[in-house]
Length: 279
Image (cartoon, rainbow, N blue to C red; front, side, top):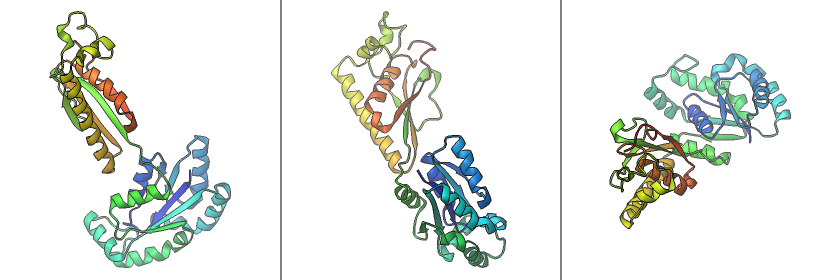
């Protein structure tokens, strides 16, 4: 996995690239002077970090004199050292700055700053393995370009939470589903003190064709919602599954979904109310 140096003009998308790499499992550091590249490499190596990305740009202008020597030293130790440089036209950079209202790091008039910055960062651009012009790219398109460039996959997790409506739905989920129409083990005295993780209880919940059909439709809906979230660029999606008390039906459905949707990197984040009381 490459050690990546990200650089480029202010407003060209460096923050988007760093967020993309961080979401893909990289340890990222912004605004690192070249003289510290080697130290960062050694520190990451000592911690067993395999994916590292750092950013160096005009904000480190007082330290760019050490660029060439720092690059040569690190490239001898890391054959997979990669430098990515981002740029865009001055007109587009100006529009982006007008939207964010941030001050340019060089602190003059913007059009003058853009020209000075290109000259200042020319040595970094000259050693770049890849130069991406982001003029016509959206943030999402740039993110996808970076993932493709380094053959990365964005980590995606589907998280499931079971709960009881009588204890209120969780507020930190993307989707809430109601399974209170399924057969309720609460009315079987032998099953009442048990949980939906147990086979007898789950069999009761899914005891007939109507329950099986309801579950199949729910499973399909969860898959569709999660896949659309993933396609939009998100790296996580959380679904809350609720019954009355959160001990039987919601737990059984959540447990079954976790098994049926493994390809979405599913995890059961919590059976929130399972131990509170029967439903």
